[in-house]
Image (tube, rainbow, N blue to C red):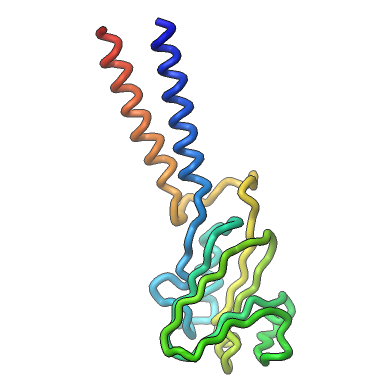
Length: 173
C-alpha cells in the first residue's frame, strides 16, 4: 500500500511540474494579429488588441509590416503627444529600409511600455499601443483568454486522466 501512495505522490508532483512549466513559458505576440503593424482601420485598434492580453517578463512582441513603418519604444509623454520626429523622441526607434520587415522586442523590464510608429501621421491615426509588463510572480489572475491559457488546463486534464486510469489498473493487482 505504501508503494501505491509513493507512486501517487510522484505522479501529483510530476503533474504540478508540467503545469508550472507550461504556464510560465514566454509568450510571443504578433502585434495586431493578422493585421500586423500598419495604419489600423480605426484609432483604437492596437489599444483594443493590447487590452485583451497580459504581458510578462520574457514575452516577445513581433512587429511584422510591409511598406514604410517604424517601431518607437518611447516615453509616455511622446506616446500621449504622438511625438514622431527622430531626434526629439525619448527612446529607441527601429527603422528599416526593406519593404517587408519583422522586428522583435523582448520585454525585459517590468512596468509600462509605449510603442508607436514615427512615420508621418501613423501614430495619430492609431498606430500605437501601451502595455504593462508584469513579473512572473504576479498575484493577479490571468485573463480567461490568451495565447497559452488553455495549456495548463489541458495538461492537468490529460495527466489527471492518466493518473486515475493507472490507479484503477493497479488497484486490481
